[in-house]
Length: 319
Picture 1 (cartoon, rainbow, N blue to C red):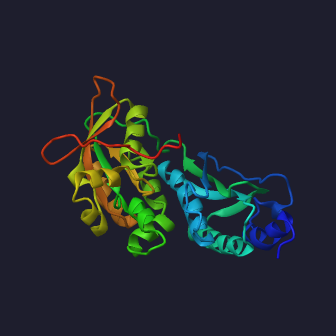
Picture 2 (cartoon, rainbow, N blue to C red; picture 1 turned 30 degrees about the vertical axis):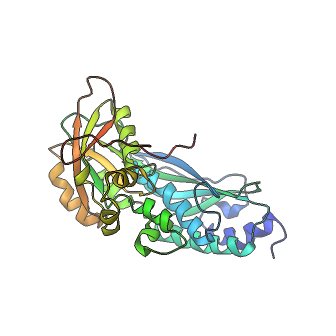
């Protein structure tokens, strides 16, 4: 049984921080270099128990969700991850076996994506939470952003949409193992994002919901989009669920997909077949970037009959 936070760190986290930047976790901060010709890229994600993951989730699920969701932000920028900082807020009823599960899965996920643990913080909290701050590098001329989409360009998405939402609904019951896996162990599209750097005109990861995240691109680029709802790729479980239009809207706004949505010019679109093949993920055209004369700056989702699909909520909001 760990005696205090320093014992926890020494037992579970120090073995994951053997890289030079971490300095043996003996100093107050990590030290790292950014190669010439590259930008440093930084993002952070926080997950609160009972809000971003079920309170009964096991340590391995929380670890994979925490790191996977944070790395997805770097994928959306076309950057390569290098290191991360981990902050753990331990609740009053914490169980050391949970922490052990978390550390093992977190270390395995670090290894999968060739990321180093550089340090972090361990504190007591009324409600348990995890925060992961990821660091990466990206080529200066080619970093992706949300603000480069132009009218006439095509809108694409990777993988399938809605499985994160379905996985959350099925979590704990295992009624759909594939969907549960998509929710419990998200796969950040890092290879795809790096390949899209210099190719895509705008990009975002689908975390809050496809509708909301496309709206983010629209506002940043000051454009609109027409999206063909029937073209949005769904898994077999998603197709079965989406027979009702209202249920389809739930998949399009549910979030937790951690795929990439992006825009691309007619000149660069032919390159996507090879890019998708190399990244081992399907890339599907779902719509077109349009002018926004009324400055609506949003994505319209159109049914097969041309009617616009309405949403109770277009995506996740904290407030």
